[in-house]
Amino acid sequence: MPDSHKFSFLAVTNSKRPTDLMPYLPLTLVRGGKSIDVLGLVDSGASINVLPYRIGLELGAVWEEQTTFFELSGNLANYEARGLLLTAKVADFPAVNLAFGWTKAEDVPLILGQTNFFLEFDVCFYRSQNEFEIKAR
Image (cartoon, rainbow, N blue to C red; front, side, top):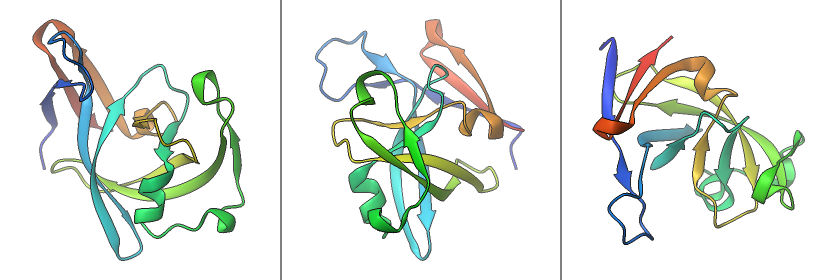
């Protein structure tokens, strides 16, 4: 198992400017027997992890069965969110459980925030080098 792993910043898919590079992390999300490979925006300013609606559906989650409710803020404040616990696999690190605010918003990236991504991993951003480093706790 590695002590740390570096990742390159990735270009924003809907942008034409080369300076629009963001810290997107490739990871695999698992729920039950289903898994999906995704890119998550590593966002130290986000309070919680946010999961777009379609990804939750692809993992077999049922909206009406989720009984924990979240209030989102910022540009997601108008959307309802419900709690969803998933297993996440990042690089060669051991799998971790991540709690998400699963939102019905469609035009939002998967966001990895303070609760609880940053409680499971230490992150160091090297923006001038277009890289970020992840270390398991």
